[in-house]
Amino acid sequence: MESPLFLTADELSTLTGFKSPARQVEWLRTKGWRFEVNGNRRAIVARKYAEKMLGCGVPEAQTYQPNFGAMQGA
Image (cartoon, rainbow, N blue to C red; front, top):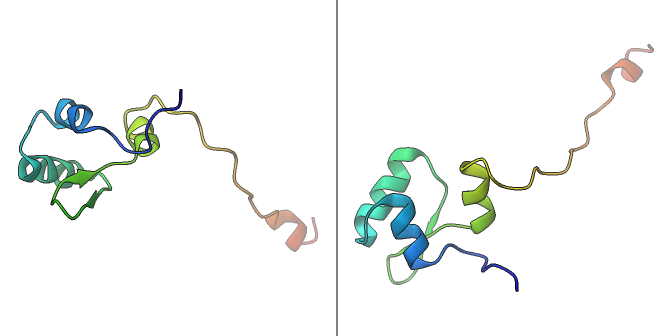
């Protein structure tokens, strides 16, 4: 069974320490987390982002890096 795309309300409450959506948003902003606010004015945090921020996510694949040496004729 796959985990949901977004943190659940209980997980967000555990993460922030607050049940109030306004306080959760305040905590996320203070800590510099990326999130969206849905139509019910609740914070939405992607699970993979939360795992990355907490240092327990799967490392992202290596991104392409240009070979600057080749551009200089080396």
